[in-house]
Length: 143
Image 1 (cartoon, rainbow, N blue to C red):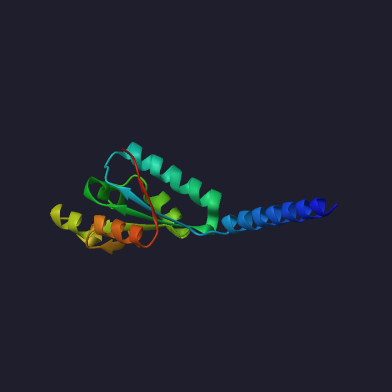
Image 2 (cartoon, rainbow, N blue to C red):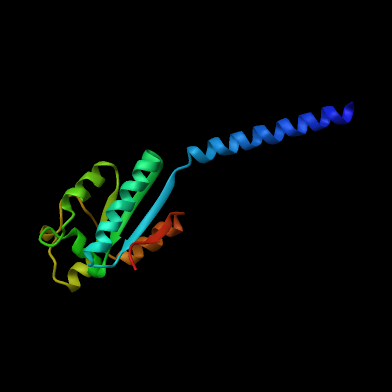
């Protein structure tokens, strides 16, 4: 009889523990930094889809920052980007887009050539490293 009581108490503790853990995972804040180094519009299209999927699936429990450097800066250029409307919609959902000033300097791109409401950082790769040091998860967009 005592063994049955102890077994029942043990099972209840395990079940309660799993329930609490599942609830904690539901409300966990996901931190994602995505690196874009491609000028390929097919890659840009895939990125837009994945960003929407993440926000649809996790809503406000996900913070996303997209760091564009090298050829990836073209996604943020007003005269080259084919996704300015989608970027604006994603910004309204809380996704940040970041332009690398080193890339802009190298390619002679002025800030006025970049879409509105972008974040500028001196080093795109440095921004990615800082985010990773703060616990953000890294994803490379494209190949």
